[in-house]
Image (cartoon, rainbow, N blue to C red):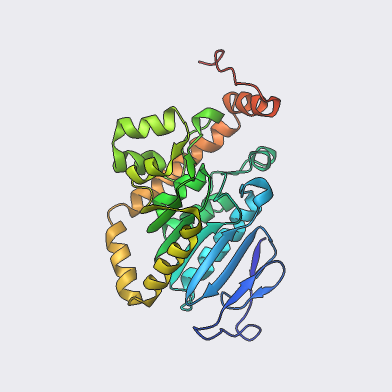
Length: 292
């Protein structure tokens, strides 16, 4: 388990002006959780909680322990009045390179809401407070699809995006199969997820995945400034506004996330994914010619 609850007597809440950060195994008192995963770091300052994916040696690829940690952080942040805004970013020159496929192949996740991956997806999709993303480098797989579930997103000029699911014998996830064509229409969406080729930050802006493209050294400062501005706004007004903006789609998004997860998990165990991942390991092009 990535995080455990710390009771109020052990860990009183700080004042709103306090700043604190966590790395294993320090208590993160502001959120009343104990972290044991150094690959997920958090910092609370000016009522903005920064969640930083911290696995630069793997381009910030996510394993199931990291998903569990992130789910716990988001769930705790949702209940804590000291947190008004969530800011998501990555360490180093990557935002997130998607799932750690070796981890997923060793123990394929069940398509259950209790599985770490789905728990994180559902917690973030249902998060009532504003979410800001700072994309300082490549965003692959869920690094791209989680952007459908944030409120403001800023990307570096050199950031590249990729939804590689078909390339590795699986299907899209995180409700991207519905939200992407809604953003840009069927043929544009099909180009991005069926050809599954990398695209630029400018293309991501056209696809309405991000708000702005910025020089790399400005991405995090701008995202932090926007997050602080949101944190200064009336909190109930923000939550209500976000709820109204998402009200029509909330049930559909949850249903789609769960449906995609059933197909994703089944295909991850299938022959096409096995061929794709074997080819990747062997550094060759996958051969899908034998499949029907």
